[in-house]
Length: 145
Figure: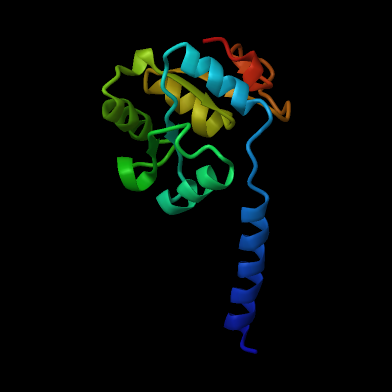
């Protein structure tokens, strides 16, 4: 077997394991119910590819429960570029200051969202910090709408 084919096999095995691990966190259902009851919309801004992100939503049972979804292909910029956040707000027809962004990466999600004028919360499920972040939660159950 050539090195190329062996690498393709290894990657295919990795991809299958990665995709089979996709799960919604236990706090997602209650958070989505609270957001819906408050009359708010959940959108997704991701650096992932459109196809893969749609597969994730379907596999995790979230397809049709969250959306719209904005990928790099949709907005023409990737996080942490502020343009990604601003483009998503524009597509939602909302001023950035009226949008609450919840992200698990402080450097990639929280700081650039704030720099773009959004309100932002750090979802720090693993307690990795930064611990001096004033808008830090460990679970979506702690999210204050």
